[in-house]
Image (cartoon, rainbow, N blue to C red; front, side, top):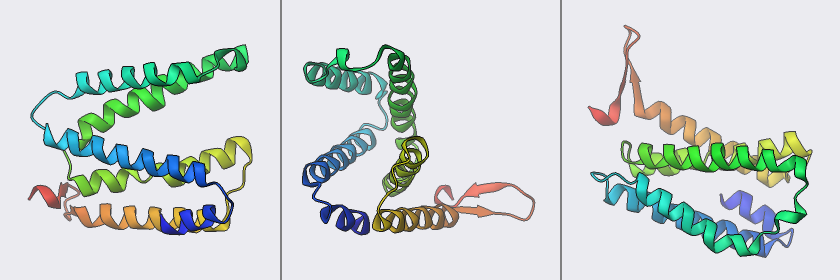
Length: 161
Protein backbone atom coordinates (compact mmCIF):
# COMPACT_ATOMS: atom_id res chain seq x y z
CA UNK A 1 0.00 0.00 0.00
CA UNK A 2 2.87 2.34 0.77
CA UNK A 3 4.23 1.94 -2.77
CA UNK A 4 0.83 2.85 -4.24
CA UNK A 5 0.28 5.81 -1.92
CA UNK A 6 3.76 7.23 -2.48
CA UNK A 7 3.08 7.14 -6.22
CA UNK A 8 -0.18 9.07 -5.80
CA UNK A 9 1.26 11.67 -3.41
CA UNK A 10 3.54 12.91 -6.18
CA UNK A 11 0.46 13.33 -8.39
CA UNK A 12 -1.16 15.79 -5.99
CA UNK A 13 -4.32 13.75 -5.25
CA UNK A 14 -4.40 14.48 -1.51
CA UNK A 15 -8.21 14.59 -1.37
CA UNK A 16 -8.46 11.19 -3.04
CA UNK A 17 -5.77 9.79 -0.74
CA UNK A 18 -7.67 11.02 2.31
CA UNK A 19 -10.90 9.50 1.02
CA UNK A 20 -9.11 6.18 0.39
CA UNK A 21 -7.66 6.29 3.91
CA UNK A 22 -11.11 7.00 5.37
CA UNK A 23 -12.66 4.14 3.40
CA UNK A 24 -9.95 1.76 4.58
CA UNK A 25 -10.36 2.87 8.19
CA UNK A 26 -14.14 2.43 8.16
CA UNK A 27 -13.94 -0.92 6.38
CA UNK A 28 -11.57 -2.05 9.14
CA UNK A 29 -14.12 -0.89 11.71
CA UNK A 30 -16.81 -2.86 9.87
CA UNK A 31 -14.71 -6.04 9.90
CA UNK A 32 -14.01 -5.65 13.62
CA UNK A 33 -17.72 -5.10 14.31
CA UNK A 34 -18.65 -8.19 12.29
CA UNK A 35 -16.07 -10.30 14.15
CA UNK A 36 -17.22 -8.86 17.50
CA UNK A 37 -20.80 -9.91 16.77
CA UNK A 38 -19.89 -13.21 15.07
CA UNK A 39 -22.69 -15.07 16.82
CA UNK A 40 -25.30 -12.53 15.70
CA UNK A 41 -26.95 -12.17 12.31
CA UNK A 42 -25.22 -9.07 10.98
CA UNK A 43 -27.20 -8.86 7.72
CA UNK A 44 -29.83 -6.49 9.21
CA UNK A 45 -27.02 -4.27 10.55
CA UNK A 46 -25.33 -4.22 7.13
CA UNK A 47 -28.66 -3.34 5.50
CA UNK A 48 -29.23 -0.52 7.98
CA UNK A 49 -25.68 0.79 7.43
CA UNK A 50 -26.17 0.72 3.65
CA UNK A 51 -29.50 2.56 3.88
CA UNK A 52 -27.96 5.12 6.25
CA UNK A 53 -25.07 5.64 3.84
CA UNK A 54 -27.56 6.10 0.99
CA UNK A 55 -29.52 8.68 2.99
CA UNK A 56 -26.37 10.64 3.88
CA UNK A 57 -24.93 10.65 0.35
CA UNK A 58 -28.17 11.07 -1.65
CA UNK A 59 -28.20 14.88 -1.28
CA UNK A 60 -24.69 14.97 -2.75
CA UNK A 61 -25.73 13.05 -5.88
CA UNK A 62 -27.00 14.58 -9.07
CA UNK A 63 -29.13 11.98 -10.84
CA UNK A 64 -29.76 14.36 -13.74
CA UNK A 65 -26.06 14.40 -14.61
CA UNK A 66 -26.13 10.67 -15.38
CA UNK A 67 -27.10 9.78 -18.96
CA UNK A 68 -30.31 7.74 -19.09
CA UNK A 69 -28.52 4.83 -20.75
CA UNK A 70 -26.11 4.57 -17.82
CA UNK A 71 -28.77 4.28 -15.11
CA UNK A 72 -29.09 0.54 -15.76
CA UNK A 73 -25.33 0.11 -15.37
CA UNK A 74 -25.45 1.98 -12.07
CA UNK A 75 -28.32 -0.20 -10.85
CA UNK A 76 -26.45 -3.40 -11.74
CA UNK A 77 -23.31 -2.02 -10.10
CA UNK A 78 -25.24 -1.17 -6.94
CA UNK A 79 -26.85 -4.59 -6.65
CA UNK A 80 -23.83 -6.71 -7.57
CA UNK A 81 -20.76 -4.83 -6.41
CA UNK A 82 -22.19 -3.08 -3.41
CA UNK A 83 -25.15 -5.24 -2.34
CA UNK A 84 -23.81 -8.72 -3.07
CA UNK A 85 -20.29 -7.69 -2.08
CA UNK A 86 -21.50 -6.47 1.32
CA UNK A 87 -23.53 -9.63 1.85
CA UNK A 88 -20.53 -11.84 1.09
CA UNK A 89 -18.24 -9.71 3.26
CA UNK A 90 -20.59 -9.85 6.23
CA UNK A 91 -21.09 -13.61 5.99
CA UNK A 92 -17.48 -14.43 5.13
CA UNK A 93 -15.88 -12.23 7.78
CA UNK A 94 -17.57 -14.30 10.50
CA UNK A 95 -15.98 -17.48 9.23
CA UNK A 96 -12.31 -16.62 8.64
CA UNK A 97 -9.63 -14.84 10.64
CA UNK A 98 -9.51 -11.02 10.60
CA UNK A 99 -6.06 -10.92 8.92
CA UNK A 100 -7.40 -13.16 6.16
CA UNK A 101 -10.42 -10.89 5.70
CA UNK A 102 -8.15 -7.85 5.48
CA UNK A 103 -5.79 -9.51 3.00
CA UNK A 104 -8.59 -10.82 0.79
CA UNK A 105 -10.25 -7.41 0.97
CA UNK A 106 -7.03 -5.80 -0.20
CA UNK A 107 -7.46 -7.63 -3.51
CA UNK A 108 -9.95 -4.87 -4.28
CA UNK A 109 -7.00 -2.55 -4.95
CA UNK A 110 -5.21 -4.37 -7.78
CA UNK A 111 -8.46 -5.56 -9.35
CA UNK A 112 -9.97 -2.06 -9.25
CA UNK A 113 -7.03 -0.65 -11.14
CA UNK A 114 -7.24 -3.55 -13.62
CA UNK A 115 -10.93 -2.87 -14.34
CA UNK A 116 -10.32 0.87 -14.72
CA UNK A 117 -7.41 0.12 -17.04
CA UNK A 118 -9.48 -2.29 -19.15
CA UNK A 119 -12.77 -0.35 -19.24
CA UNK A 120 -11.58 3.25 -19.37
CA UNK A 121 -8.04 2.88 -20.75
CA UNK A 122 -6.69 4.83 -17.77
CA UNK A 123 -3.11 3.63 -17.39
CA UNK A 124 -2.06 3.44 -13.73
CA UNK A 125 1.25 4.85 -12.52
CA UNK A 126 4.23 2.51 -12.36
CA UNK A 127 4.19 2.63 -8.54
CA UNK A 128 0.53 1.61 -8.58
CA UNK A 129 1.30 -1.39 -10.78
CA UNK A 130 4.19 -2.45 -8.52
CA UNK A 131 2.04 -2.00 -5.41
CA UNK A 132 -0.74 -4.07 -6.97
CA UNK A 133 1.73 -6.84 -7.83
CA UNK A 134 3.04 -6.83 -4.25
CA UNK A 135 -0.52 -7.13 -2.92
CA UNK A 136 -1.33 -10.02 -5.29
CA UNK A 137 1.84 -11.89 -4.33
CA UNK A 138 1.22 -11.32 -0.60
CA UNK A 139 -2.37 -12.54 -0.73
CA UNK A 140 -1.43 -15.55 -2.87
CA UNK A 141 1.38 -16.48 -0.46
CA UNK A 142 -0.90 -16.07 2.55
CA UNK A 143 -3.70 -18.14 1.01
CA UNK A 144 -1.27 -20.87 -0.05
CA UNK A 145 0.08 -20.95 3.49
CA UNK A 146 -3.41 -21.18 5.00
CA UNK A 147 -4.40 -24.24 3.02
CA UNK A 148 -2.74 -27.63 3.16
CA UNK A 149 -3.30 -30.06 0.32
CA UNK A 150 -3.08 -33.77 0.99
CA UNK A 151 -1.99 -36.25 -1.69
CA UNK A 152 -5.54 -37.68 -1.93
CA UNK A 153 -6.78 -34.43 -3.48
CA UNK A 154 -8.77 -33.26 -0.47
CA UNK A 155 -7.95 -29.80 0.80
CA UNK A 156 -8.19 -28.81 4.42
CA UNK A 157 -7.77 -25.45 5.98
CA UNK A 158 -4.69 -25.26 8.17
CA UNK A 159 -6.29 -22.69 10.45
CA UNK A 160 -9.22 -25.02 11.21
CA UNK A 161 -6.92 -27.84 12.36
